[in-house]
Length: 390
Image 1: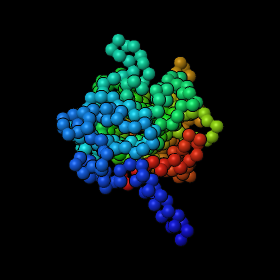
Image 2: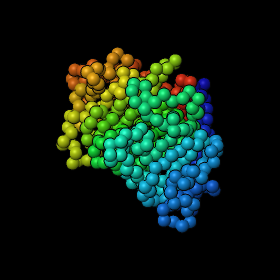
Image 3: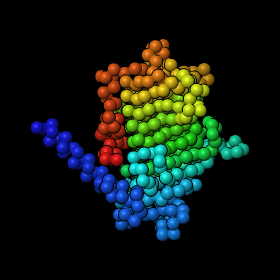
Image 4: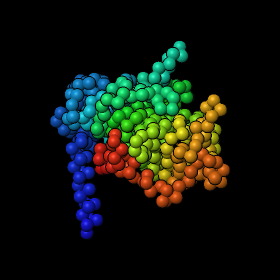
């Protein structure tokens, strides 16, 4: 009885937190189907509808007060060519207009931008400037930097959005149709971000989650070629599609961070699928795509209960050799748990020290978002911002 009461109590608390953070589920869905049904104070964006409040999404974002209030923006169907930058601390919800609320392949709103970390002359800039969407409190917080520890973000940098949410919007970096330097679809640092039925498309470094960043993806699509899930923070990808547009480097490339507390920073792909992006590319990448490689020796990633097609390399993960030096050591944690499909090769995994196949006991500490998402002080259980009703 006590355990049942506790579970009911947690469910009610989570439901209340979800409603407090944004639009309740039923109202959100009605709003996405018809902008006439949106709650009062919803900001409407359209590139063609004269009744909308703004014609660009960034203008709508900039109209929001820089405070802790909850705000909602509905983006009407269409393609918007712009970069988005969210710095406010309060909850922000971006809704994409759609009639297919639970199918990311039928999204009607696309945000596009074409940029990499260098221009046509080859001049380099920080990776963040390539991003279609940036969520971070300051420019300093968003910098990727270089080297084993990345950009040294100042200690007094504030935390950003406590609950940023997006539903049914695609983000496409169209810089090139192959890996040509980092070209982010998403950059998120020092913020909590939930992405539901969304799409993220690029070729290199598609999704970056930086220091103290927490990102949750649900029934979304993430597509790329080289190191297209990378960063320092924590990512949980649930019931989603990882699409291989080609093979390069690895799918995951993580930098762990030394902290005064035991951390679980890393990327967790759970109950999802990893497969060639289309039938045209599939025959050319059979057995060639690594699951990941260590950006530094503290890399952590786990593929769990996930389908892997024949594109995956027999070894699973690979080392990353720089100037003749391996980045792989006994602290590197590149693992799988109950993965299945033609891409899982038990003999191949056993032949390398790069890949770890976990037992149930070894996977248990990482088996839910409540266990891996931490607050800036390292306390676990920082998952109240996730929309469990999506």
